[in-house]
Figure 1 (tube, rainbow, N blue to C red):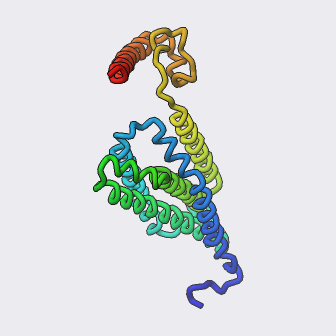
Figure 2 (cartoon, one colour):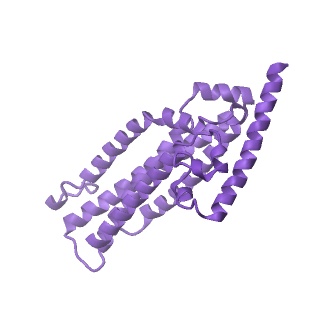
Figure 3 (cartoon, rainbow, N blue to C red):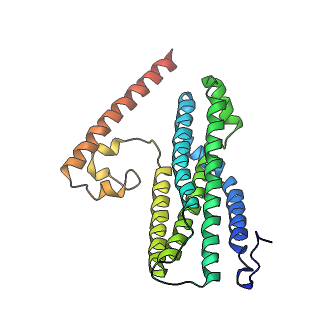
Amino acid sequence: MAWYPSHPDYQYHWIPAAATTLLALLMFVLGKKVTTKISFDILEHCDPKYIKDSSKNAWTNLGVTSALVLTMVMAMLQVDPISPVGFELANYELIHVQQWYVALCIASLLFNMLCIIVCVLNLSYVDPLTELNALKFFLANADTIGDPVILLTESFIFFIAAICVWCLGSYGLAIGLAMLLSSFVFVVSTGTVWKNRAKFSPGSVEWTQDTSMWRREYTTGGVMSNINNESVVKTIKRFGEVALEKEQAQSKDSSERASE
């Protein structure tokens, strides 16, 4: 068949497509297992009366980001096939590299489109609702925030993997390894930032007024390393004073309403 290479060197050309499809399915299934946790992690400290606007902003940001990545992936799919620069690959090696590249791009494209559609559908159904009905919507659909977050993350994974394959096939092992190392740094850095943001809890900020009370569980390591910096300390104290004033005002209002 014209659509299926008959040369013996190309008999395993289907492996990249099959392997990427299985990996995409596996990631999709595993992602579904953590979407609820991510949704509630993001909304954990959200005031219920603001949940509609907060969620709409999240869907808009996720959808726009995914659309931007989608345009890059579409461009990557339509460029000329990978061609080695300064070195040679056997024909069967080259076709495998090309197949891996295209398969990974298609997987990224799929997750990006899913992310955009999920965000658009969520916005379409929640926007007409009242604040009360929007709250009921989230109680009935707990995954609506976590789903697009996971889909966007999965699309980035395949997007980065495709770039690694392109660098390897176009410029050789050295550049391929450099891109792989850069990708590792990106993943670790993103995971670290995500973990730190998820740890946030809006507790008391009394520690801001006394540097001896500063702890890493209260703020970032960057702030702790600048504990002797006058500008940093002054700003932290100023922000802390405003937060304390608002906390005291809220506490006073709550006490007055309780006494009534």
